[in-house]
Image (tube, rainbow over all chains, first blue to last red; front, side):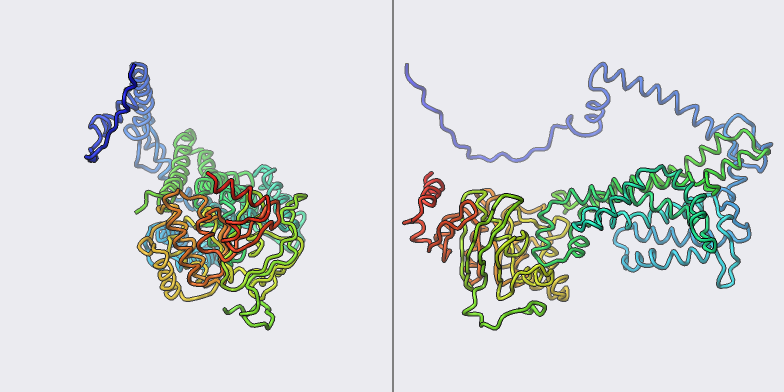
Length: 374
Length: 259
């Protein structure tokens, strides 16, 4: 037997790149692989389509086609579809609560300024963002307070017991979000600190607030706190609720942030330290920017939870959006329109939460600095 | 150098060692990782430190800029004793550049921003000036054309060259290299070593933990062999490689050179 010679070969012509076969990319290919991959898959797709049809068509019929949109009283509703007259007739109350009708322009101005500032910060490549951010955090709260509460510059005082509706929900959510994030970051840094006293204070704080339900916190803030503080100190009920929500959410935020901090490799801190950066610069310039990017989903998750949790203030007698709609449902003139009321509340909450969610996804893509960019 | 906060003795630059380790001992818990290390490095001297893994090479050079804390002994860098005082530690760190095995570039900043970060925030220099100087250093490591990319878009060798440029931007007196080529593909080792050789030829004081024996032979003034936390042998490269005295060194060299 002869041993065969190992064949040798040399490739002289390099192969040019070709485009992928047309049936492996595009819409048709996507449909085939995802919806109609086989007989069972196709069956499920068709069944799911039928279920969606069963659900969507009557809903749209009720909410849009058969619905009554205009009018002022329940007599304007035919009863075949949704009665959106209930919402439109009470819309002012849903937005402003019991805020005096002739003064609601003050709330409108605050809404407008806030929307403009947020838009400025959210749209990329706007000029002087840093300045606008400082204005939003340092100046806007005072403007908002003077306009909403009044009491100076000749503005009539509107006590917080008259605040309500969407406006109150937004006040609670925005203050909670803006205050809880920096507090959470500080708590997380404290919990990872080498200093035993700082560390234990942060651990106790976080574990305490995470261990009690928000409802308990709100009850304690509204009922028990006044018993403990001296008589002459009279904290406003809204302020107490705000403090409660902020402390509660900052504990959750702290744990989200801590998770992000732990994900940053030690080498990053070492490199920063070796370059002579101190603790705060190292945190602010190197660790936190990277960690916060990783934490966007978790932070926004907490923001969304916070936004929805604000509706719990109804149990201490604050009339947020949900509470005021519920109060409207109890009005004898409008009995029986609870589906419309709750659907409206759900829609408003959903719009805000979904916007936050979408913006966070956009931010994640924007901050991605791996291979894809450029 | 403008290290105003740090105290210094009055001897002149020539007679004073750049780095001095005296009776250095360090433990990780109960594990005695550095045992009575004595080492003196003159200005402009190039030292290669080799030894098996776990011998304390990296730990030793990491003690010099206080990334690791030692329990006994004295460290003096450029006349400044390393104390517990954070101001003094930071002053020493500004004098000592460090290059890591895994580069440790900041992935959220561009190459240029990586280089300018410390000059701007530590040395408080104007951004324009810092950027111009950073570009010079990037030019020197031949990567200026990538200045506006992110580290994640560069190859390992390119990243390590950026890391060297980043350290140089603080104009350090000493450079520490902690296995700078160990995480690189063979193709990329040379481009990093070339930069290191150039740096050595310019008179930089260098301490390199490395297994690149070719680099040790051509560049080093002294080669140090460490094992089990001790300096076993210390010699000029020629006698070190051709005529090692200690049995342990002979064994180590036969293992890394004999394949």
